[in-house]
Amino acid sequence: MAHPEHPDPEVASADPPLQLLDPAGALRTDPRLELDPATVDLPALYRDMALTRRLDTEAIALQRQGELGLWPSLRGQEAAQVGAAHALRGQDMVFPTYREHGVAWCRGLDPVSLLGLFRGTTLGGWDPYAHRFNLYTLVIGAQTLHAVGYAMGLFRDDRTGSGRADRDTAVLAFLGDGALSEGETNEAFVWAAAQSLPVVFFCQNNQWAISAPYSVQSPVPAARRAAGYGFPGIRVDGNDVLACLAATRQALQRARSGGGPTLIEAVTYRINAHTTADDANRYRDAAETEDWAARDPLARLRAHMVSVGAVDEEYFAGVDQRERELAERLRAGCRALPEPDPAAPFEHAYAEMPAELRQQLDDHLEFVALGQQDGGPQ
Image (tube, rainbow, N blue to C red; front, side, top):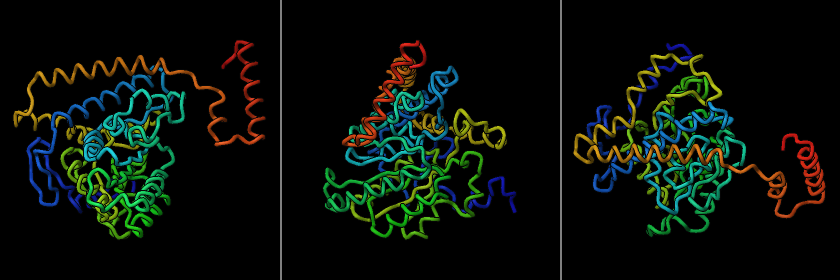
């Protein structure tokens, strides 16, 4: 029996994750994961993974320089996020946690907007409908209920099961393995199953819910837990971008056609600490992290593309140049983010401001003005 503070190897091996690209980059086939190679843009997948990683790296550097208060790294999870994002259609809606930087990138969100949340200049700051990508959710598991509520609306608006690719819509909700222990997530699963809602729950099982390993939450893989709610679960290699793409495409299409929810467990690993405020060395063995780092999702896809002649060195040089341009834009954009309007939290709390809140706003603005006159903090 494994020690409760360490992952149980029997849990990890009970249901081997489905895989289309092995760690060396060799292509496999699996009847449970149908994927037409002609529909896959390998260079675009690698580009988005590489730029997502650079975004993450630059954000960490900005936090270390005091430009951000906090940053939750996604390093190691690029394939899971980019693969899932590339399975979306334009009308599909995404409900993220606070770590889906790769999905935000793929949906076209300005990455500087992400920095504002962690710089303290905004509480979210983007229009969820502009890119069909909702605001980051810091309350663990809450976004699963938001996703189910949106899926209820789609169901009632007859936006599923018509057979029209431009109309039928699905919801993709991201969560970490730690969210599986939250009441909100279990309620979301119950409602999604009972009403056969068009929602896909994409769980990035990165092995650690802050300092708690997955084994202290469940004796079985996450995907297997879906059966208890009455819908399918599938377990894929989260470091295999093609497996993540294929599984999410299938699940989203099932949801759009009226088939109901699916739980996808992408087995991956967060190479960096939970956030920049965390010290993972206190609870993780360095050998474990090194083992997972050797399964780098970018290296895997790169090896495959080179082996099949999908790209040349000029392509990689172009990606490197785009990374440098992105890094410069992030550094300049972060420091140029405007200070928030002190009235904004009051003005956006209600459609019509109550008299009591109006008085609080007036008092607050008077206090801010006094501070500015005295040369104090604004």
